[in-house]
Each structure stands twice: as structure tokens, then as C-alpha cells.
Image (cartoon, helix red, strand yellow):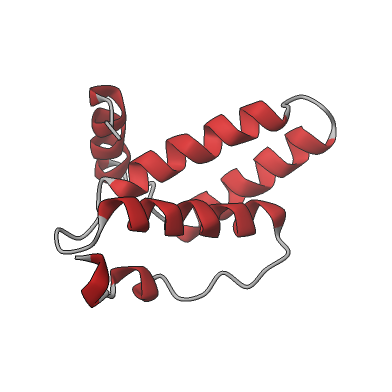
Length: 102
């Protein structure tokens, strides 16, 4: 999995202007849900949005973590967030390095 230079630049820019806040993320997810509900964006658009978010989060994957597993966990959590039907769990669980995953 290769993360584009544009994604890396966006990550840097968003971090520098403080758009890592939970309130911003909550508003973004709600906006996506509302636009999807009224047909402005389709399932493929939602998938691309989730991929962009996951790419950005994966940039901060701990070095000792298995990057592919970390990405899969992020994807699963994003799916739960966008569906709004499951408890997502603690982000720190992603940071725990599993012995067999290293």
C-alpha cells in the first residue's frame, strides 16, 4: 500500500491548522451521512472518503505495529463510525503491538 505525496501533504496541512479535533471529525462524518441520505453522494463516494481518511490515519501508524493490520483495524472502525451502529472502542487498542503481528 502506497500513500500518495498529496495525502502526506494534506496530513501535514491539516495537522498544522488543528483540524484533528473530534468536533471537526464528528461534523465531517455527519455531513457525509446527510449528503449520502439525500443522494448527493453515493456509496462509492463514501468508500473513497473513508479510504482518504484511513490513508491519513495510517500515516501515523506506530513503527512497531503491523501496518497492514493497523490499516485493517482503522477501516473497520471507520465503517462502524459511518454506520453509527457499533461501539468503536478505544483508539489506544490500535496502538497495542501484538507479538504475532510484528
